[in-house]
Amino acid sequence: MGSDSSGMSGWAGYMLGQMAAESEQSRNLFVAKTQHRMAQNGYEVRIQNLVAKGQEFLDHIKWQEGIMKERKDQIAALEADLVQARSDLERQQSLTNQWKDFGDKSEANYDELKAWADKAEASLKQYRALYGPLPDAPKSSS
Image (cartoon, rainbow, N blue to C red):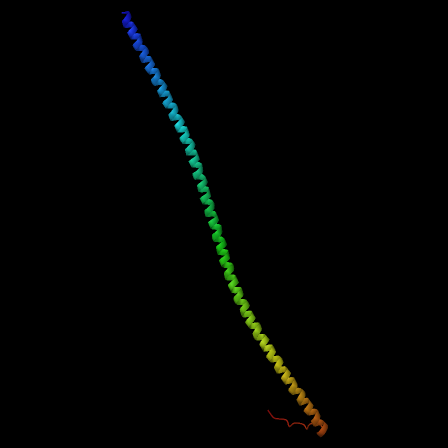
């Protein structure tokens, strides 16, 4: 029986060795899976951070687009005001030129009328010098 017990203990030793080896493999596999999960979690966290930054960037771009739209609307309004101001200025310049022409013509007419009046006054003085005062004009009945 001695050899039987030696065979049994060998077999038991073999089985214990196998179990220990399997246990070591199982532990190593568990550690590898855990490390893999942690690495994946690290990547997931990085990916989530990148996605969050990307969304933040897109929100910032949308905000800037809103500001750009406001600026474009303000520029369009200012351009419309400028067109109106130019139109008003052209109209005022036209009126100013009309008044200037009117003033120039009025001045020319005044000068012509004054020359005629001076000539008439000179003729009247000459008449008075030659013939005396003018006779009274007959009164008209109206």
